[in-house]
Image (cartoon, rainbow, N blue to C red):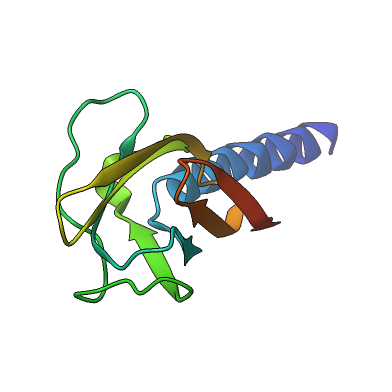
Length: 122
């Protein structure tokens, strides 16, 4: 009887480990509030450990100052939690925000001085 119980506990632990691993590879989504003072035309996100920006992930063509959008980081970016974000405006100006913890993030405010605040976290 003890052997069956031990086997069941080990099986549950293994299934739990695989569930955690699979969930960490899912797309991450969070809201971003534009507090930069300008309208943005591009939003790029990449894992902090890489130097490639990849594609623009802005869901609309423009990200107006004072508005909020939902950003989704693709699952193919892996299980990293730390991301960098680069934003550009219509005249080519850009700001880079580094070390954003997307795994705990619900709502992020980006500011024109290059700072950001977590407005809501998990």
